[in-house]
Image 1 (cartoon, helix red, strand yellow):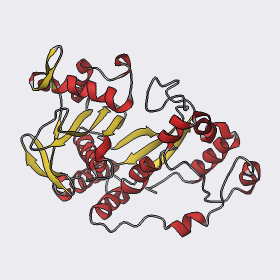
Image 2 (tube, rainbow, N blue to C red):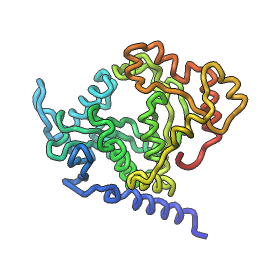
Image 3 (cartoon, rainbow, N blue to C red):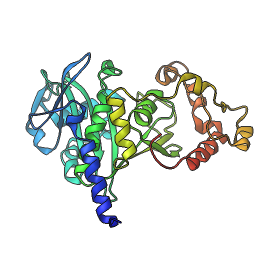
Image 4 (tube, rainbow, N blue to C red):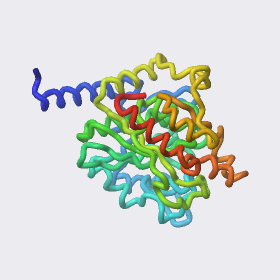
Length: 314
């Protein structure tokens, strides 16, 4: 039998090969990558670090704007956060040195400017071998077009493996179905935890007063099932659950949750709004009521489900 250290090295090598950008339509370009996305055209992706403090992307009332400060401004635009709550330029400059990564996607013929940007991903390195992904953003008018978020996560996984990480963790809002589609179905991550008020009160125009309850996604980069999932998605071979399969599952609600907890079905469903942002703007009290934390025992039901499903991609 192969020694454990050799098996681990072999698994990492296989994962690096599975995540090779060329497998997903990328070509090397100007120190980064370029690919063609349907509905967008040529998309460039670059890894950003301290050197980009010298790369000017435009001007504002204070003078020239470099890539790092452009990224600071975009965080505020996307999430509506005050300046003190975004990742500052001096930290963005050194994240790569921690084993983390800062990736930006943009129209290749325009560049990473206020007009040309398409998305970005920020992640911090960890000595435990787990990369902590902090932010993923896609330009509002590009969501659902070209799989920008998925491509950024693939490159993030590739960079993570090359810097010695074997897994990635991040959090996402359980009220946002599009995030679950990306994280669980298209990437093959698993939900490993459910935390109430993970970030406390978020001073964000995007989230408003809705609680910051979060699922934790755990993405095992060296699991062969992860490699199979991303390859199947790229080749359009992956088929998620059919609507009839989902609607046939028992539904947990505020009215039947104790009975559902007692019955402990192996799978269940919970309704979320089609557009939580619109609901939060129009009827914030309803958005707060729908959050699993206010459903009391639903937290217990979620914990029971997580305890019953602990290995391999979904």
